[in-house]
Length: 275
Image 1 (cartoon, rainbow, N blue to C red):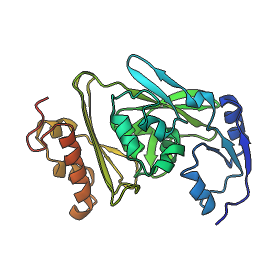
Image 2 (image 1 turned 180 degrees about the vertical axis):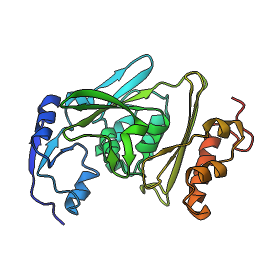
Image 3 (image 1 turned 60 degrees about the vertical axis):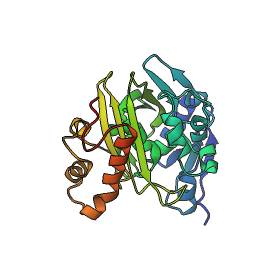
Image 4 (image 1 turned 180 degrees about the horizontal axis):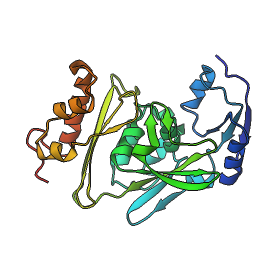
């Protein structure tokens, strides 16, 4: 199929992009075009104007701080995978990026584009939520910071308001001895996950987080993180409490994903980590 007719503009800078997006209700930003492109061809999306933001310096910048690294939204998956930008986590981001779709997609797809698209099964949605990342949003009223678990609100839904852009993602640096695990189920390389989970144990900064992804909605931060880490709650119990409306069969993959993420983080889901 072919997309419905639309106008196309290359933004000169971030201010120009915001002005162009605010000018019409049907304007949409485009960078890697790995998600929007197929939607255009299927006519699931029919914007009147596409504003190209892929090469904006403000969205391509990476800023290193003592406590976090801020990644411009137009940084590609491949640039993270290849180590062309610093990895705030010491390797976890590179590993996650390497598992996204296929290399051709990673060459073009962007960090911000994936998060703004908010596919429930996408890697960055659950990984950035699990790492306690922060979305930096720019819009007509200025910049605002939104915790990732609040930025992603549902399937293909975010807190972005009309005329706003996801400009950057800030990822905290983990403290000494931090443990991390990320597991996803895919039938074959390149597919979206059927179930996924992350585990973060950063006691130096008081960040303990167990997160489920690929739920058909936004990632879910489990309230039982401390109990899971101590072995007082099993993955099956935590998932059952979090997804009470699903059958045991419907929860099975998420239970195993959480157990394997705990194992990757060096935590015995039966007996706790002792960390």
